[in-house]
Image (tube, rainbow, N blue to C red; front, side, top):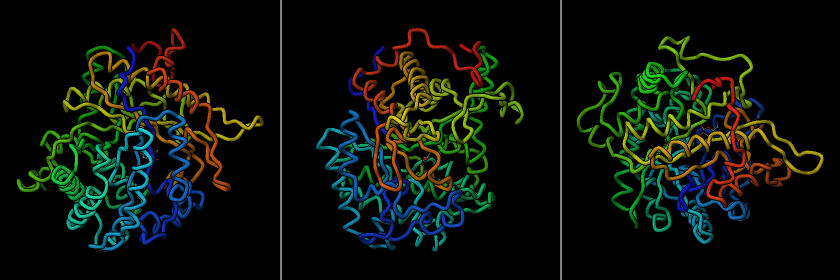
Length: 453
Ligand code: BGC
């Protein structure tokens, strides 16, 4: 089939990773501004990154050139609310101008309220360990909704809650760089309360009907083969949900009001009334997935030597796209939005002045064909947001992993469209027909053995 005309072909970014201007026009520091020094692999900070705060107009012009139908970005909470109870009009004005520029050229804004940059002032008052943080988040949301909801229809409350809670409080690899896994259930409760409060306030105040979702960590587990046993095992492992790092921990609680045991014990009836605000779509950030032949750790974490990967060693597992869309739709009954999917490598400018990235083109082709397969089988998919519009600051990993469709020279701020950007432009312009240029795609191998249908 062809992708529908109203399919939201887009790209995604996050405030801390692209904006810079970390202390300009009344913004206060986030935990990433304050705590990254000392934890960054290459010594980078978020002070300038892509300088998007000052260059957003040219960046929107590039999005237009790409033919994007949507753009997923995040609002920086400490830019809008630099201190408790204080709203920074200049911060709101920045996002107001951005969404006006987008809508002027027909690009649908998909706004994320929390992409990990907790205000430092909130952290100093206990951060996600303090239930008040959910109330402050509600106040911040109300200000953003009031300022932008005449232009913004799509609202994503949280980006990968499983990701930031696990990396921030168990692995210690993301801000606030802590290793206190025992706190994760209580922290999850407060994040879920914040989601519920925000969803309620969006529905109450939005100036047009709102479409609300979360961008949950994708992945999960997919089967070794297409046979029944394999499918059953993989589905069970995907939805085991007993760990905050798994998306079922969040989705089963928020969408199905069916929290895992470790969380259920912490939730009162009143909490559930706030938390269980059913989203309008199921947002999924999908990069990779493990295969399973059984449920022991060894079987779940099966790895093949020399398998195809990007710079983080993340294996390419395009079939994850198909299973993720299909199974999540079956379980949660919500239309799916792919809120992130992308590939990082060490791109550079070649001697001909261009940035050639055939691996990224192959990655996108394979994943999008699997998404199309799920759609052919009846899964409603609203859109696909490639991560990322442009190379940016990859959190503690620094500037080396490059995910962008647009190459960024971080010294000069020059932007160059990579080959994958030209490819994506054609995919969008042909409603996906460009993906079928190769009549009989060769299977990938690695984690996706050629025998797997
Ligand atoms: C995050 C992005 C990040 C990307 C690549 C996602 O988990 O939402 O902010 O850059 O993965 O690691």
